Amino acid sequence: MLSFKLPVALSLLAATAIAQSYGDNSTLGPNADGKYELSAEGIRAYFIPYGASISNLFINDTNGIERDIVLGFDNASHYSVDPFHPHLGGVPGRYANRIKNSSFVIDGQEYHVTPNENNNNDTLHGGPDGWDFRNFTVVAHTTDSITFSIVDPDGKEGFPGEVVSYITYTLTPHTWHLKMVALATTKKTPIMLSSHTYWNLDAFANPDTPTALNHTLSLPYSGQRIGTDGILIPNGTILPNLQYDVNDFWSAPKQIGANFTSPDLLGNCGTNCTGYDTCYLVNRAQNGPYDWRTTGSVATLSSPWSGIQVDIFTDQDAFQVYSCGGQNGILPIKSTQGLDGRSRVVEQFGCIVMEVEDWIDAINQPEWQRDKKNIFGPGDDPYVLEAAYVFSVKKSS
Figure 1 (cartoon, helix red, strand yellow):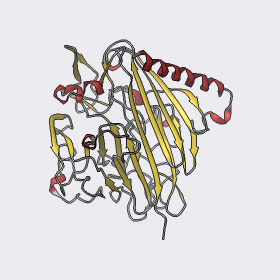
Figure 2 (cartoon, rainbow, N blue to C red):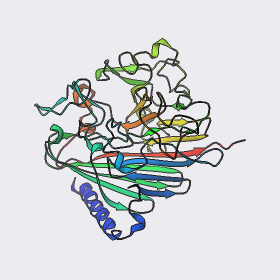
Figure 3 (cartoon, helix red, strand yellow):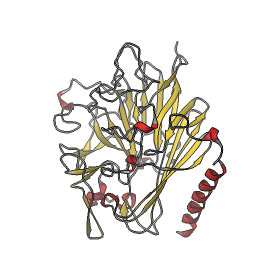
Figure 4 (cartoon, rainbow, N blue to C red):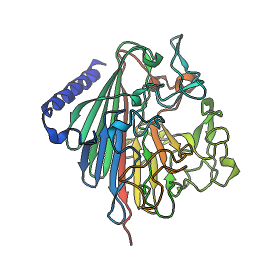
C-alpha cells in the first residue's frame, strides 16, 4: 500500500513546487477576467478557481471559425454571486449527484448531510456549500496544464472526515484531459466526483436552432440505466434500454431530440419532465481487460451544423446525461457565443450536460457492491477519476 501512496504524495509536493516556481510569472496568472488560459494544438480553454471550473473551451468548427462550446460566465467574479448556481463547469463534491434522504450508513453508523433539493428531501452535488461553491487553490499552472486543490474539513456539510483533493486539467493536441484525485485522511467517507460541464457544440450560433437537440449522441456501452423515482433518486433497480426505445443510444447514434414527441419520454427525467436526466451504466467487462484510454469512447457527441465532435474516454462506470430541460431563458450566454438578433440566453434544451462518474447514490444501495468505488478511508488507495475529451471536426465540403 505504501509503495502506491508515496508516489502520489510526492507528485502532490512536486505540483506545489511547480506552482511556486511560477509565482512571479504574470503571463501565467489569471487574466483580467480572473481566468487561467491553457492551450495546445487545435484547442484552447480557460479555467477558474471557483469550483475548479472550466469556463471556456474553444474549438475551430467545420469552417475554421473558433467556437466556445461550453457554458459559463464572462468574468470569474460572477460565479459566486449568481443566485441560480447551475454548477457551470465545476467539480461537484465531495459526493456528486443525489443522496437519498440526505443520509447514508458507514460501518453501522448513520450520517446526515445537509439537504438542498426537493424541499430538503435529498442532497445534490455535496450540499448547499459543496465543492463547486468554493474557491480552490491554484497549486500549479503551465501553458498547457493547471492543478487546483481543496481541503474539505471534517464535518463540512455533515460529511465525516477530512478530504484533500487535487484536480488537474491538461491540454494536448485536440484533447482535454482531466484527473481528479481525492484522499480521505482521517475517517471513512463517501467520495464521488465529476465534471459538470454544459455543452453546446454550436456555441449558440446555429441559425436554425438555439437548442442542442440537433446534437447526435452515441453511448455504445450503455444498454442499461439506473432506475429512479420522481425526484431522480435511485430506487435500486437497473433498467434495460431496449433497442429503439427512447433511452437507446447504444444500438446506433441518434439526435438528442429524436424522441421528444414520444409519450414514453414523459417522466424520463422525473415527474412530468420530458427529456433526459439519466444515469447510464457503462458495460465494458464482457470485453475482458481493457485500457480505457484506447478501448473506445464511452460517449460521442457531435453536431452536424458546426461539424464538431467530442469522443469521451474515461475510467468511470456510469455516465449521466442531462438535456437541460430546466433551462428557461434566464441564464446568459457569454460574449464569445451566440448569434446577432437572437436573445443572449440559454433556452430550454439549449445544452447537454455529460457527467463521467460512478453509479449514483451507490452508498445507499449496498447490494450494488460499489463500496470500493464510493467509500474511502485513511490507508486506502486514493479516489481517482480520469477522462479525456478528444475533439475532431468534419470538414466542410
